[in-house]
Image (cartoon, rainbow, N blue to C red; front, side):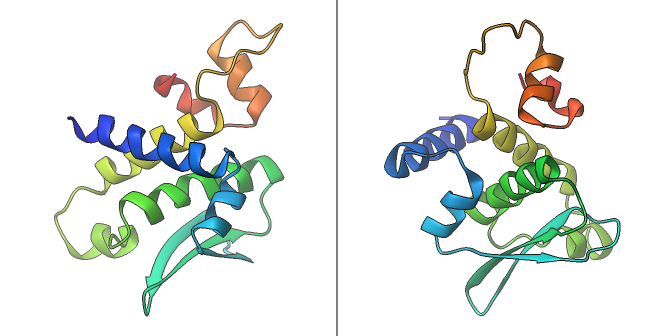
Length: 140
């Protein structure tokens, strides 16, 4: 089983278990604390301290951006729980791009995943409908 196949299967199990695709609800079920803060020009980040998982979201971005940010950071909490991407990018040679690509793919999949909406015919229309950044079109 490939890494992505395993991640998709685990994500599907979580969605099925709690019958939701809402990243805020999933975070609550997984006991991941969410904080809304002024983060300047950063959308959000995930960290773990004393085995407590935390998602930090910029309180100054739009609701759609907060939802996508929560979905993205939730993927880090589930699949990259020990990774600290700001630290990795500044202090190691480890590729942060792979981790970020996985989180973007899974966040997009969580929020959309095979949903058909009448009147929506393109990827761009679908992304706009769900308030997902247009750069995520490559994951559809």
